[in-house]
Length: 320
Image (cartoon, rainbow, N blue to C red; front, top):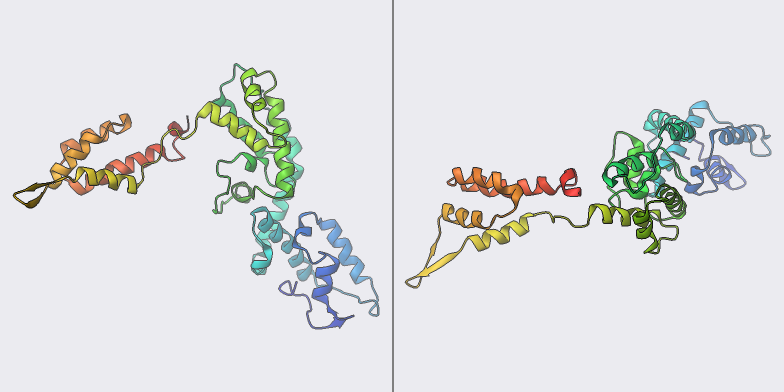
């Protein structure tokens, strides 16, 4: 509250104005900002200003009131991203940006009913392909705000721990970083299960998959069970440099001659490595390397890079 510009010197009954507002409006608890409304905040400002001096009157300038409003949005951002607001100073210089974000989020929440009406989603029946239905289900969840205003699509994201990356769209940042723990998550997780269960009614295979596991109130586990069944799990492990180095060590065979050690040339090492490459998607690269086998260092970079692109999360082929 001090950073917002509230007096932190003048005392009334042993507390400064900043301390009194932190207690009276926010109960000294950052999480209360999740349910605070601007109308309620304005009414509290009016009540404090209407007190007499003997009662502890607090009159705030418009700029300070605006800072408190943006403080609420800043706290919401932190909590929605699983961060503790008490560990970071409130960036009052970002007040204008935070105020705009608050209004945008309000429009998202209030407009969600209209968006749901427009985002028609067909049932996942026996005749519908998972690869066609799954993205539309995620988009459907994206239109529904959860308990704390985070789009429900955060429940079914790939990474359980979240991705510590900021997105231009703050709602996507929420989806990427919202924690999979806490009361809000429990409520949202149960809601996703209800939605998912309703959409698979009549799909005998999907219903059997969910009946085979204990998914009480766990929409994420139910969705992952379906995703694993239809997409598979661990389809193709990512080739990393440590694995590639092990291949190179085998290719870098040495031979002892006359009690001495003769090391193969780079070209010979590469030919040995080429013989070990059998993956179908690397054959074109293998042929290209065969034509320029003398360029050893460029060649050994080509294979792992190609493998990494092949199995990267952005490549749809590795997710089927």
